[in-house]
Each structure stands twice: as C-alpha cells, then as structure tokens.
Image (cartoon, rainbow, N blue to C red; front, side):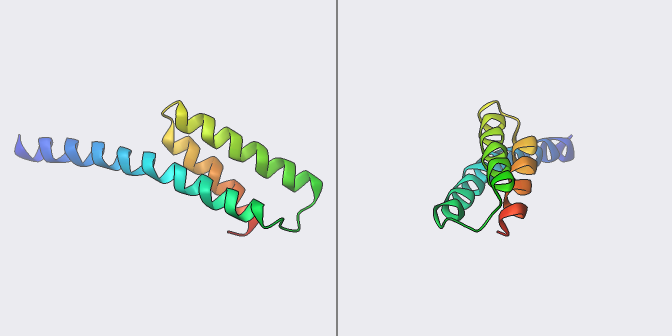
Length: 79
C-alpha cells in the first residue's frame, strides 16, 4: 500500500514538472526568435505555429503534447 501511494505521488509530481517545463520551452523559443534567426519563410511560419500550438496544449493541460510540439520548434531553430 505504501509503495502504491509513493508511486502515485511521484506520478503527480512528474506531471507538474512537465507543466512547469512548457513555459521555459516557450521562453527559449521566444528568445531565439527575438534574435531573428536565419530561417526560410516556411520554417519561420512553422516555428511560430508550433510555438502557438504548444502554448495552446499547455493551457489545455496537455503537457506531454506541448513539450513534444515545442521540442519540434526548438529543433528547427537549432536550440
């Protein structure tokens, strides 16, 4: 029983860690975009869309999805 409670607590803690990671990922993307990186128009548009989608997923509580989408944007940016 004790092990089950500890596992549940750790699972909840992991979810809140991811929730707090999303804003940091968005800040990193915003900071890189502020430097006007050399991207094609298509890549720039894709990064902005992924950034917006990531924020929307974060606000909807879908933190795993948010982190995945934001990671794609960071990969394009080379962050």
